[in-house]
Length: 175
Image 1 (spheres, rainbow, N blue to C red):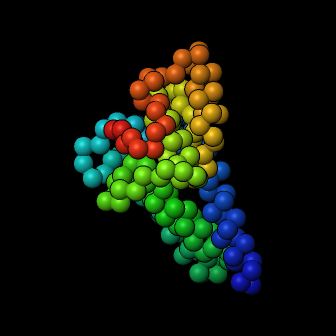
Image 2: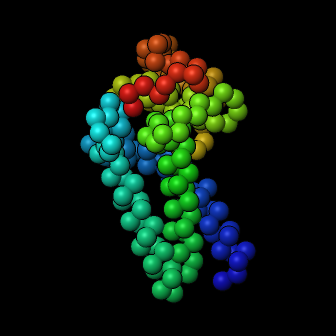
């Protein structure tokens, strides 16, 4: 396969993973898979949370795809590589930037990273699995859009106004 084809498959997979991640987060993690994901919406008591099992499952799928691709089932290795790249971006943005699960203490003050940070805080502003907004991991709607969605979902009331602060200087809370 050509380098251009491989690069296109890789990039399409990275982009497609955001669509898949949105769907899986909304309908699996906040649906029948809440048993694992619930730990992510509660205060963490150790280094890991049950929700991390999702990363293990997706990494396993990526490893299998890479193995199948290198065994001749092209271009599956590039699909697996795209999944892996998306996982690394997720680890950096979600686990590192938003939830501070590693020691970088950067607080975004403007632009895309601030909007991503704020959107995820608004996702966690709702307690429980119902009535949440912003299910993507690397795409974030505007704060105004998310506030409107929260008001619609909660009959004109925001969850707890102290938790909906979008000040990038505030920490991500318990989750």
